[in-house]
Image 1: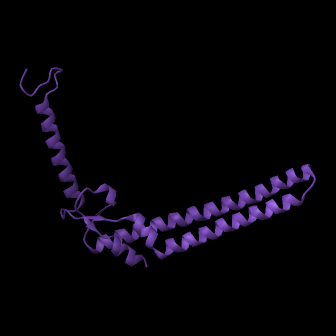
Image 2 (image 1 turned 120 degrees about the horizontal axis):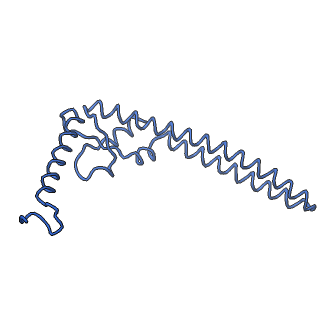
Image 3 (image 1 turned 135 degrees about the vertical axis):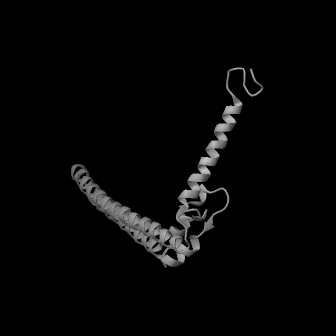
Length: 160
């Protein structure tokens, strides 16, 4: 047994060579993906989403939708309080609940569509800003340990 092999037959020398080959391959793939420039853009999508005027407007719309649902619920509760017949109260409760749930589902679908549109706009703007800087690879800050060119502020200012 060589000094690079363990008792269970694992060759640590072979593992070291494989690790080096993986690192070299990874570097080559990154080099090719960046077009040889080695430049990588970083965009904090959460920060862009929290700063963009369209995101702020979307939150205001969503708050209005939630307020509307609260009012619908309060009105239903008040109407149910005045109903003395238990059978009628149960039927009314089911009707109100169905109306509220239908409205909630419509609001949720509108909100989801608006979020998708916002996400697409952020991504397209990020690609445009990175392209102007000659950068072909964009990552989130969570994906980068060190380095990269942070274009978040440029994306935010472009979206405004």
